[in-house]
View 1 (cartoon, rainbow, N blue to C red):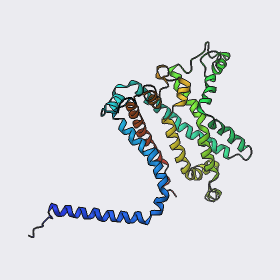
View 2: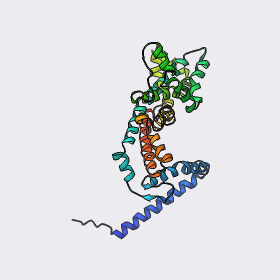
View 3: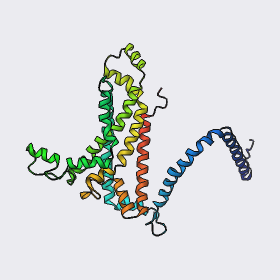
View 4: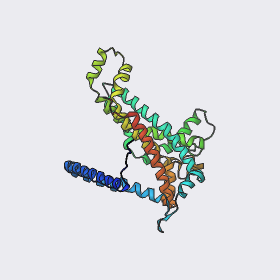
Amino acid sequence: MEQVTRPSARVETALAGLRMVVKAGSWWREVRRHRVSYVFMAPFMTVFFGLTVAPVVVAVYLSFTYFNMLEPARWVGWANYRSLLLDDDVFLIGVKNTLLFAFIYGPVSFFSSFTLAWLINQLSRLRSLYTLSMYAPSIVSGIAISVVWLYFLAGDRYGLLNHLLMRLGVLDEPFLWLRDPRTTMPSIIIVALWMSLGNQFLVFLAGLQNVDPQLYEAAAIDGVRSRIQELWFVTIPMMKPQFLFASINAVVASLSVFDIAVALAGLPSYLYAGHTIVTHLYDYAFIRFEMGYAAAIAVLLFLLTFATGRLAFRMFSTHGAY
């Protein structure tokens, strides 16, 4: 029987080095062949790495340190994450409130915006007026809108909602809508939903108006008769790019809710009923100046947003759809 001889370790190392040299040469030839593309991409990539990648890397490093902005950062390992997940009850309340907000705000804002856009797109007259009325709340800042809703949800008898309910006999005395833990988060969700309709609505309306009319004619020849059938067999499949954009926006907006929660419920809110992940981050970063702990919160929020965004990308990706 012929004995198979294996190359020595020195020969294997030399072969591995030769393969790396060949790969490096091939990679360099590809870079030279597409050098014009790399030159045009260089400004964007510089800004991307400087303003996006570098802050993320610094935040990940700071999340493993104790840093109060007065002393040099001190390495503490996993202590910040261990405190967040095992000892910080307020953070867990923030996570619960944020996930509750995301599970309601994301789907409701998504489907309500699309439904309104589809209904208004059916109109032949006054479409511009309805479009403007739907988009108007989005061009006003969240703080300004909160002032209006604070008057509506005020906890005294002069609050508009309390005044109406007391006049109708539903309430005998004013109700603290933004101080009662049962109604604080629902109030924040309602205001955020009302503000969110405009942007997504405009994206969906633009997508609806760009669907090729010949597709509807072809569908009619194939037996599609009603508007609902057109919506299901033609409109929704052609709206996947808009669905992807709107879903990513909804994910980011729902997990980063801050200004509306603080403006309506305060910081900290009563019994932390309106506390979210970002308000917890703001508390530790800009009030307590514990930047390492705040960086750990930011990293966890980044991972949660990234995972949810990837899920939305998988659901509405148009890769191979056409």
